[in-house]
Length: 83
Image (cartoon, rainbow, N blue to C red; front, side):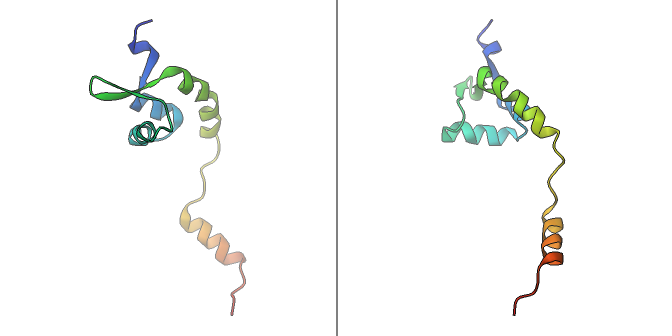
């Protein structure tokens, strides 16, 4: 296994986790996710991402959340007006 095989790019990690690459970069900068600078870019160790993969796949199978407008409409439909 070469050094490159032990890491994901931020783009690869982001796709697995289900977020954007800039989010992964921010998490690394904030210390929320292990990552390293290599050749001017951030890489993330494979092990923690691979451990998270089954959870990420399960989350992707969940129906999407309603939009903000749908939530507001549902709240307004069921709420009495306060006077």
